[in-house]
Image (cartoon, rainbow, N blue to C red; front, side):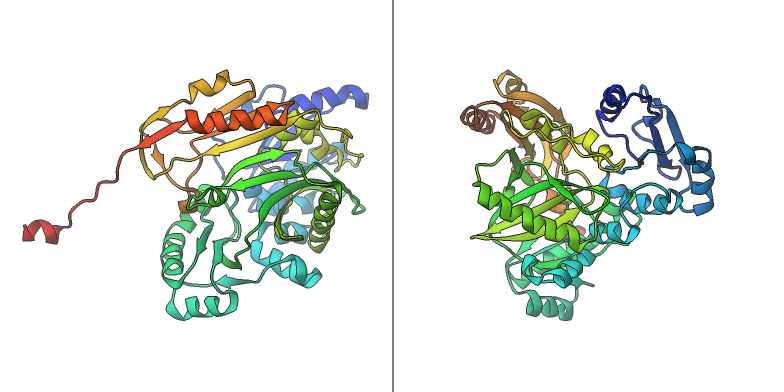
Length: 430
C-alpha cells in the first residue's frame, strides 16, 4: 500500500519482484479524498486498487482498509509533504511493521528533530531556536542565542524552499518578513496538515553530503553510497538549493564510515524503524554534523543509485518493510549526477538557450523541463522551483565532470528585467 503518491517505477519494480516472490502482489494507492488527484493516479496502468477516504475522520480510514486487513503486506509513503497523512493511517494497520507515529512527527519537524538530536548527542547538531514572530525583540533574542551568520527555514518544507542565510539583523528582518508573508501559502500548496513554523540555526560552513539508509524493524541499518551535494551558495549564488548531486563520492573509506556512524546516531535519536531514511550531513573540517533526517527517500535517489550502482531503491523501500534484507550490490559501475537549474535572476522567462543541445552529450540520461518561456523564474529561497532537472551518467568520472561543465556553458536562461510601477503619489506629483 502506497499512501498519497505512487512513485515513478513503483509498479514496474513490484511486478518484477513478483517472480522472485513466487506469488502475485496487489498494489494499492490510498489517498485523502480532500486532496485533488491532479496527476490522475487513479488511471495508473497496472494499479490494482485506488482507495480514497477522508483522512480527517479515523472511522473513514478504518472503514476503507477493513476489507484488506488480512492481505496487507507492507505500507509506505514516499512524499515528505504527505508524512502527516501517513501518520493518520498507521494506527489502522496495527499488524504491519511501520515507524512509530512519534518518530515520523520528529522526522517531519526540524525543530522537534533538533531537540531529539540535542538530547541524544549534542555534538551532532548546531545551535537552534524557534522563531515566533518578526519583531525587534524576537530578532534580538534569536541573534543573542544563535549569532550571525545564521540559517532560517521552515520546519516542515523540503526542497530548500525559503532556506536563507542572514549575516546581520537587517537581512534577518527582510527574510523573516518574506517568509512569514508567504509560508502559509506554501504549506497550503503542498497540502500540509502542519501549522507553519520557522527555525533559526547556527550557520555551518563545510561540505554537504547525504546518505539514504534502510532501517529494519530491529534497528539494523543498511547504507547506500554517499552523495556529494553542491549548493548554489557554494557557487556564489544567493540561494541554498542543491545545485549538483553526484554519487559515488571520492571520499576515503574511513571518512565514509564516520559519516555513516553519525547518520546512524541521528536515525536512532529519532527512533526510526521499518523505513527508508534520508540523512543530510555537513563535513566541517574532520567532524560530521547532521543537517536533517527525513523518513523518506532523498530527492532523485531512485535514479542516481540505479544508474551508478544498480540499486533498486524503490524495491528496497518495500523490502525493508516486509521485512526482507535490501539488495545492495557491493560495487558501483559508474557515476551519476543531477543538476537543478535556476535562472540567475528572478523574473519572467524570455528565452531558454542550449537546453535541447544537452541531449547530445555522452553522459545525458534524462531531463525534466518544468518551466517554459513566459513562466516566472523564482529563487528557491522565495518559494520557487527549478526550471529543469537534469540527470547525467558516465562510467568515467572525468567525462561526467566534463559534461557538467559543458552544460554550464551551453545553457542560458534570460529573464525580463523587473518593471516597477510608479505609486499614485509620484504620478500625481509629476
